[in-house]
Length: 270
Ligand code: GLP
Image: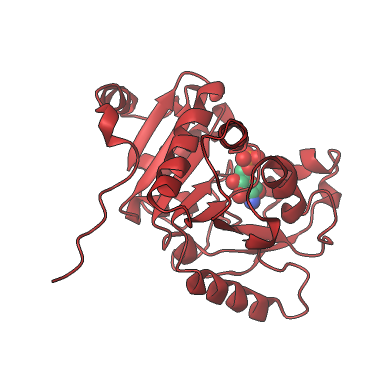
């Protein structure tokens, strides 16, 4: 796992966008995994700026969302389809028809979860997955206690998550849906490269647990330790509880410029 500590949240956009752009440079038809929430916003802004300047095109890409609320109509401003449209798609050249999320409005949610899994697999899997983390350590909407092998399915949101997300619903916790359809931890771990962004002191404990704690369903993001290629981008505030933060800083400062965030492709078996 590569942990990158940046001076402040403004600095997060560039390396996050670099990671995505490196995948797109390697394969203009790359499959992107998009996260909603405030954490990836600076990455999205930077991607939009690069597309605007003609330095990057996402026109050949397709994308999958991590999760969706159950019971919110798609056109609701806080449905994750609406949010990602506002935060990213409206500002880049990604075809909205090629951005899919789990269908939280389906009558048969179990079937919708299985369909979503099949669609991701048919696209060849996600090449680069952006992630945030909840203050309770959830990724996507995999709340504490989620199976580390889980696939897309219905989950019940914790009170903590509904409180955290009430800010998007006019501060009204009761307006935040209780259920969601979310990619599982097993689904997320199948993406080729995970790029998690965490900002602010409210995420410091989750960041410590995910990077340095035991791998446990109590802190679902700790499953990233099982992934061979995970990049964690944090600001100073979110890094305050990291025991090895001096080492992470030293490693990033000494990182050769040519290395980037990609791994060499494995050689095909002969
Ligand atoms: C939400 C989303 C997650 C997101 C997390 C953190 O509930 N389902 O995908 O990563 O909570 O959100 P934020 O980035 O706004 O702190």
